[in-house]
Image (cartoon, rainbow, N blue to C red; front, side, top):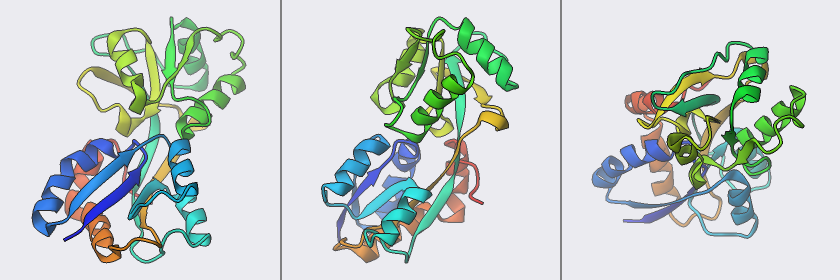
Length: 231
């Protein structure tokens, strides 16, 4: 039996936490996860850090496939993740029904939090969105840059930040109230997938992980974890 090393973004972390024990019991394989923001994962890949599976947005995996770093065979698409806004449990939910309402909510908030631009797709999108909405100057000193993996969710739960903007799958917490997704005109939807690395010494076992995670019988777990069905 193999011990598999999986490098993954934070979006599916809670889903993997739920599904992995069942896979390990059924297969006899063990899985070691490394969860990190996307910029850090890409640095790990560039440095040649060993891994059997990469779990990332599909557009990044497409590039790695062209470069020969991951295999086409056995690739999986787990679903779509949109950026959602959250507040502390029990706090009033601002109206985010259109871009102007989003802009107004940001300006009225004491502080907001999202991932650091350049670290994650959602962080980069939110940084650009604040500029596009024309409120970059007004929001200076009110924006906290911290990924969900590094404690951004806790800042919302504690009330230090009034609103958090993260991929839905990263904010499915009983400490938070989900406001909902950004309006379509300013939304970013990321397609998350996975691939076996070209250098994996346990490619068959790695492919079995992806097949298990992507099994239709587990779709309800992905949905409950904030992933919409793949296209």
